[in-house]
Image (tube, rainbow, N blue to C red; front, side, top):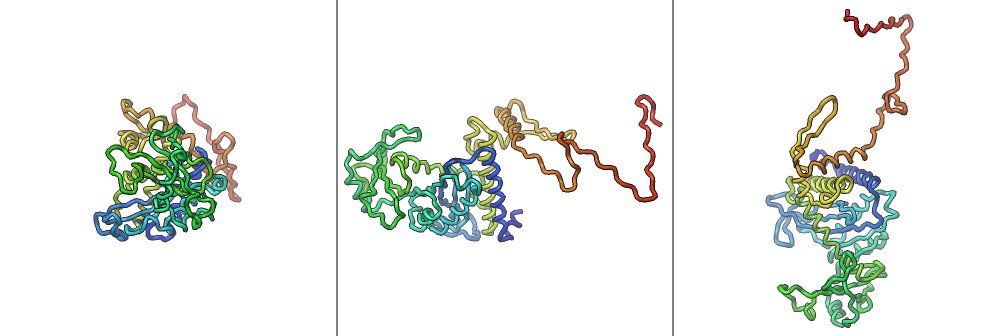
Length: 389
């Protein structure tokens, strides 16, 4: 199958279309998010042998540098594109290509009402990408380099101007303050309405400070066009760290080592890894509860996916028998029962028997006989207590 997809130039597009169709079905069952944050990030994959497309990386390694996109609210893998190892992390053309693939994965009937946000690290602070966001009516939140004008503006901020940073539960962080420095900078080259928000925090006791860390504080900056309170916007951007968890989980699901020598075959492998990612995310969203609904793939693998079981078939019914003493046997049984609620009744085959309201096959109409022939007389059924002749 991988050979067939890799040999057909348009086949990988068909695979992505089927992926989008399955996503639309899941969103139909579980509900679509009102706000969707698309996280873009690139990661390095080491190649331990000579493979097509493998190149030296910026970390002095050798391998590939794919660009990936994930949906933060649903935990789904929206898009991914395999690239050589020497591809840049801030290549705007690649970022836009993957972002457009991510948009194609959102159901067409729901994309108009969903508020979209593109979230990237400092590699996303390029004019081409943010201009594309403005044309596509997508909000953005990207990291911003601490240039000399930014550092100068930070040192001139009075202490009373800083606002306490907040945690996901809106409680104030014991260490961290935020402030907006848009008025102190020249943002003429960026889209209208762009804002720069900085955060400072005290380094932990054993941290090594750099000569640019003013007054013992470490600072970070973001560039965004979102309205709202700066503490909430900085908190939401800080949640971009979850994309690192998705990438790590995908590397545990087959992305760490690309198995083929040909580049196109490894592109297909990347698509299959994304499918596996979403199958687990959809299973957790629709069928699992409690701790298993938030477990990572490695834990699910040892608790549910690799459970010892026996499949028995009797009277055209398949029964999966699980050891009753297995700690998570009841969770697996509940998930199997819940999956039946989402099964669609298959459409009747073309030319098949008509069905009545009870779902049973309706009797066929009597077949007409050719001219000159007669039907044989009906056979009298045997008496139930009479021995057969």
